[in-house]
Each structure stands twice: as structure tokens, then as C-alpha cells.
Amino acid sequence: MHAAVVVFPGSNCDRDLAVAFEAAGAKVSMVWHKDTEMPAGVDVIGIPGGFSFGDYLRCGAIAANSPICRSVIAHADRGGYVLGICNGFQVLTETGLLPGVLLRNAGLKYICRTVGLTVETSASPYTQGYNAGDVIDIPIAHHDGNYFADDETIERLKAEDRIAFSYTDNPNGAKADIAGILSENRRVLGMMPHPERAADSVHGGTDGQALFRALAGSFAMA
Amino acid sequence: MKARVHVMLKNGVLDPQGEAVRHALGALGFEGVNGVRQGKVIELDLDDGASEDDVKAMCEKLLANTVIESYSVEMS
Image 1 (spheres, each protein chain N blue to C red):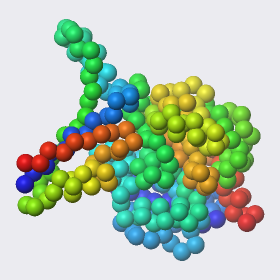
Image 2 (cartoon, chains in turn purple, cyan):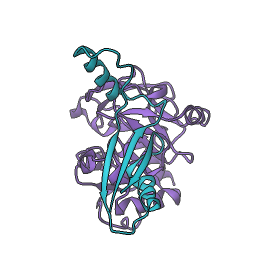
Image 3 (cartoon, rainbow over the protein chains, first blue to last red):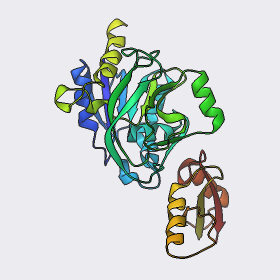
């Protein structure tokens, strides 16, 4: 698996994400936001957490219109894999690759702690290493993680089994307790929690490891 | 020429910041404030001849997220 991690000014989980990909056996290329093309042979693009462009205007809005994002969209349109975590999820909703938007947390506070997530589906390259119904512990660290979409979109996400993770105890007001969602072809995942921060025993938890291993495994088999 | 863009959350989208402001006003003794919605104003300094349609295109592409926000444009 060859993974590219996109780096924006203000990204701060880019290296953690690269380490998690490498630990799962991936070759990793770091890609700067002003680049216009992905390195040849990239299978997966990771959009990391952080505060791209200082969260100016709206979280992820400036990043979503940066030069590299045109090639992220083209990669996804060709059926490529994209994983957006935290600010990366916000960027993916702003590009339109995933529906909805992340609003300010309902309690207005920045929340940084480990939360319980229910794995809602194992039918995706990212979640096939879990069983549907598993509860895993993954850290969150965000001010704008309150997932919002109109009722019709929420119903469609449910009907199409595209909710990847939900909160066991909703920390931020997200509609339908949504923590992460999949694209229609299930190859684009956006999630607010940070699996790359629970991917090594020194992190204090390893429940995120299975996500990266499953993703790498789906390329090993191909 | 200048354009002023008003961006507001659409009706039905919860505005926790507006709610916090409403509570704060109540705590300060201002009574009868039944709702607060917080938006933003963006002022653009434009080349002469720019049209309202140009500014609307900017709103659609970047300045507003039309999933949750509505916008209005004033040219002057």
C-alpha cells in the first residue's frame, strides 16, 4: 500500500498519521498543499487532523479549495481511497466528497478525551477488521465535531449502511451520534476521532490499529 | 467598488454560539431576548465592473457553505 499524507499549514496530526500507516506496512509520501499532483502509484490519501489555515472562514474550507485538493477529488472520483480524520473529515465535507458538515460542538467547548465508539458496519476496507457492534476506545480532540446533515441525508446514510462509527455517549451533539461516515463506494471515510492516536501500545490504547491493518490488508490481497 | 456579503446559518440549523449569547444577555439583565442568531459579514474590495453574479459565485464556491448557510450580497 502506498499512502500519501497531505500537509496543510496548521496540520498537526500529519506525522502521527504517517507513522500509523507505516506501522501497518505502508510506504508513505508526504504531500504539500501547494503540490498539484499525487506521487505516482498512490493507493490511499490521508487528510490529517489539525487546524488547516487556522480554521479561518470555516474549518476545512480553505484547505478544500487548495491546489492539492483537486487531485484528492480526482483520486476519489477514480475510485481511490481517502481517509480524512478530524480536520481531514471537515475538509472532505467541504470538498463535497462526503455529505453534511461539522458544526461547533453543542456544548461550545473544545473536547479532548478518549470516547467509546460503536463500529456500525464492518463492510468497508477501513472497518473490516472489526465486527459490527464492537465498542472501541478512540481519542477525540475537536471544537467542531458536531455532525449535521438534513434528515433525508441522515436517513440515506443509515439505509445505505454508510455510518462507520457512532459515539456510545454523544460528546458534541452530532446528529444520530455520528462519528464517522463512508462515501457511496465505501472507499472514502471521514471520522472525527483519531485512530492514529490509538495505534501503538505507548499511546495507551491500540483500538485504532485494526483500521490501518485492515486497510493495508485490502491492498495486500488485491 | 465594494461588496458586502452576509452569511447566516439557515433556519433549522442549531446555532449554539447564538444560544450562548442569548443566555449571556439574559444573565446581564436584558429581558425579552427570545432568540439570537450569529452570522458573519465579509467585505470585498473589488475591481470596478465586478458584478453581483461574480460575488454570488464566490459565495457558492467558498464564502458560504450552502449545506448550512444562506447568504445575501449588497453591492455599493
